[in-house]
Image 1 (cartoon, rainbow, N blue to C red):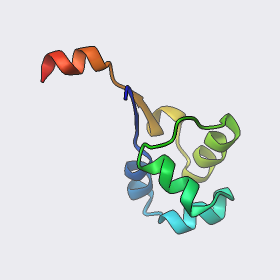
Image 2 (cartoon, rainbow, N blue to C red):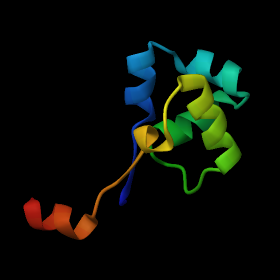
Image 3 (cartoon, rainbow, N blue to C red):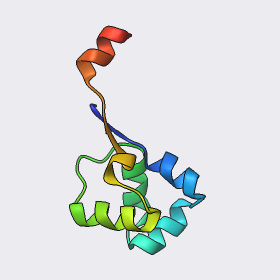
Length: 75
C-alpha cells in the first residue's frame, strides 16, 4: 500500500494511549486500531480532523505517501 499510517508514532510522541485517544476522539477502540495498523481502506475528514485536534498535529504527520514503484526499485 502506498499510504503509510503513522498514528502510533504520533501517539507515542504525545504519550497518549489508544484508550485515551478513543475517548477524546469519540471512536471505538476497534476502529482506531484498524486505522493504527494501516488496515483501514478510508478515513473521513471529520475523523482525521478530530484526531489531529486531539494530537495537536497535521494530517501529514499521520499519513505518509510512499511510491510503491520507487520503493520496489530501492529494495
